[in-house]
Image (cartoon, rainbow, N blue to C red; front, side):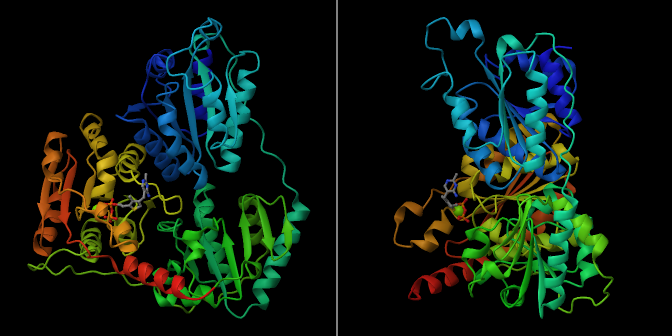
Length: 541
Ligand code: TPW
Ligand code: MG
């Protein structure tokens, strides 16, 4: 076994199922090993941001490692933003970069793709990954791989592995996975007792679930826990899509001022808000209509539990949920709050299309043809996704990078074999939409809805006076044909309803529906968001 094979087998043994990548000369030997070993399938895309987003989405949908393989410098540095997004949103992406070999480094020449020093790239990735290794010593490389992959799983954050090109074929030992660190049972029991006590005394306890619940594969257990404790459940914005397939008393998504009053009141009036794996960020909490005092909440995140000023520093979420389930009293009192209702029954008339019509059309479609996993980009398409019934969703709901939707949607299909639905704005499509050209050769046929308002509309809502938010009117439906898919431009609700039905019936090629949306026409959620943010910023203090 050589070092590359040792690394590839370790990736597979740690849960990775496929690799997304783009080679370069520093990475060619490693890519040859990927192809000839057949240990994991390789999907190449066109631009490294797409590779990073695809690996991230695969990690999210599998609740396991995603892998992005690139070349040194020009390749890896192109992935800084997607990896930063994965870091922020706790997606376990393994970045594997080719690198110059020892002999080249000592040649005294500057090397192509080198930024400041040979180490610059390693230093840059230290900022956006939780562990790193350069495999330049075969004696310690297997242990380094084991450590880095264990970190990736434990923290559910990206890691960085650099493979000098002259090391790829060197004979190496297989990687022995690290054993899981033992948990401090007494500490966990103490945390569990305090949590259950707080919940029992509370007048209006509520459970909010965030991405860690999915990252650590806890959805079914958390659903059972909610039933056991009789707690109503909401997701955070980034956690939207969680529990979609679990039997949970799920009411909707907490969006502060942008959300429905029922969910917002429930969360903001709770005297014991149990935050399970929720990243406490401005997108979740900055838009609260009534400031949530985080000291009154119970927070389980990043391997610790905090109740007010009381912190239990070593409590992994999985172990906590297991102990809560074991210790919780069997209280059958179901939560009384009603579930959210979503727009349905798209009226097929000649009115222009509003974002809410797209939500209604998709809800109708899924009711007839079954639920699809969704990848959404940033823009009003993401707010519109909040009006689509619960289904698996991957979107950068906290870090909020554009360009995510199309590559993520391709990865959903690569990872699950299921046809995905991609929601993307025209501005975001301009960034990474061409990755759709790769769908044909891999047999992916996602359904893509482009929200074309010829505008950076979200930015316009905050700063209407700026003309730079006017984009040109690109013909996205025409681009679809050139990329190997089918495209259709629709302007009315009737055309939208018909196009959705046609698209779902056509398999084998991606289907792009370009929905023309008049500027200024926003989803209800974005409307409330903008009104709420303006109201909040108008308040003194
Ligand atoms: C990589 C900043 C946030 S929203 C937005 C921009 C430029 C406009 C989105 O336009 P689009 O959608 O896609 O047409 P819509 O509904 O608003 O019309 N660069 C990156 N990420 C972000 N978030 C920005 C810039 C931004
Ligand atoms: Mg737009």
